[in-house]
Amino acid sequence: KAGVTQTPRYLIKTRGQQVTLSCSPISGHRSVSWYQQTPGQGLQFLFEYFSETQRNKGNFPGRFSGRQFSNSRSEMNVSTLELGDSALYLCASSIQAQGRITEAFFGQGTRLTVV
Amino acid sequence: AQTVTQSQPEMSVQEAETVTLSCTYDTSESDYYLFWYKQPPSRQMILVIRQEAYKQQNATENRFSVNFQKAAKSFSLKISDSQLGDAAMYFCAYRRRGETSGSRLTFGEGTQLTVNP
Image 1 (spheres, rainbow over the protein chains, first blue to last red):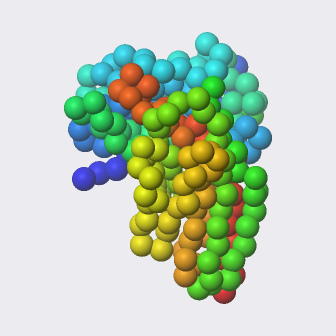
Image 2: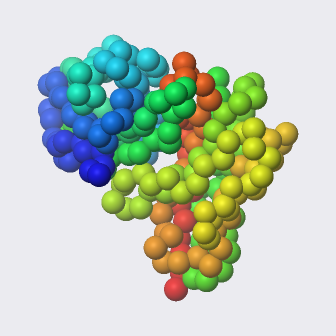
Image 3: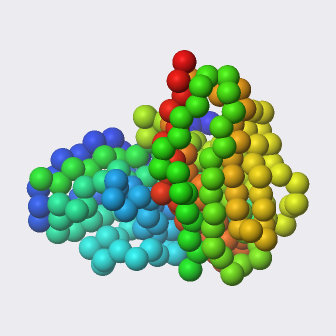
């Protein structure tokens, strides 16, 4: 079974631009979460989607948004990029069935550099 | 809000020896999960071990075991017979239990483990 796939792996953008990152969860996983990892702030939760609905949201500005499609694939978008948005963005998927949620399985991340 | 604290930014161990990584957390919940994740240089987070708060028995996975002290809100990871491949950043993580809570994880700051040959 294929793991969580994130594309692209690396990205360089200019301040003020916008960017879209993609995450394909493990087949059958309907929950997708996004995290930002930086040396200064560590791993911070961005948001979680389940069945195309945002279920949880972290403490990030509105420039960060996401969505989930009917096939459970998810995208996150960052508009008006700032230098501080440079980070590793990690996506994780998990199953939710019969009231249970499995542990999260992570992708390899997208390394975003804003210049 | 839940918080997770790892007070050891760096640890080192000799190959074949045992090392313990510390983690404390703060929560008002009584039912939750705790995890240890490993992040090698490839950056992919890999689940090492999980513990369900309602279970008193400490979880073990081969060379990895935890010491879960619920009253003290402590969750340490012991790695026995350390191998070079164990070198990585280790993160302690917390997740509330319950369908409505979703799969949101709260992570500690991480502990960089070096294994010396």
